[in-house]
Length: 411
Image (tube, rainbow, N blue to C red; front, top):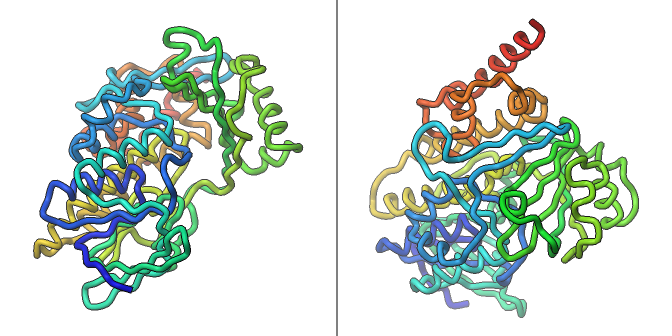
């Protein structure tokens, strides 16, 4: 096998990989992307948060994306027992984007790859990485093409943005116990006819079935809508039948959306994913960094997945460029601590969502607008702003606020 040398090999052509490639293309670093699947391909993670926009812009991708007329997302709505909590990204603490998109990921990810290819970056689709060995400052990578023929590349650095493929996590035995346990998801797309006009037909909504179970509605600008449930495995086990029958039974447990989708055409049989939370022992090692879902995934409730993907993809590309230029990089400090800080904030919010405390806060009548703005900034993805007490003291702020609101309710 003839071996071709690059400075950086990116594994995966999703948002993490394309943001990394977009940044690297603007430098003197040579880069190539290996992607196991052929695009367009379906994937979940269709609701973005505003922090993504900063990263798309810095990677030079925003201009092309803005031409695509994706559904604008200006906030989010939560519904529980007839009560409604809405968050408007324009009313958040601190600076940052006030909007983002809801996107059909097959189209969105394809557009990202087309934008990167237009800039001259090679993306090889249908290439499965089957081994990666690091010796004397160089990675030797063996991949298999769709015909089963082996090929070989070498690089000085790998950014693993393989998402749920988790290539290096598997090859290097880096998997670790998940932080959020025993959750599964089931979802489908519908061609939504007679969609309500205005906000009701464009706004992402989360309907809470019970403390541990919730439903999502994500409308796209093309008339298709994404529907799905996330919940504890025990709840899923209370249903039986085909995936389609189970999904209909679950929809019947919604109050707000129970009758909205009756008779609507499903574009595919509902897909179930078990054990959706993922984790790894470390985010980087000698000559590599893990980005996006190839590293860690918490839970989809606050749509943080693509934000972490683009943040880690961009940062890993920046640090790899500096390291390849001869600079000594403290990856623990500049990469792991930066990404872990955000993961820790969102992990707190996800865990407190499922304890019910954060849900109580969302639906209280007594929370101040100041507090709501601070929480909204977290939901928008601005989780590095230590001026925000709900970032700085995330592990205590929610519990303390809940305790205060509960005491006021008792009194």
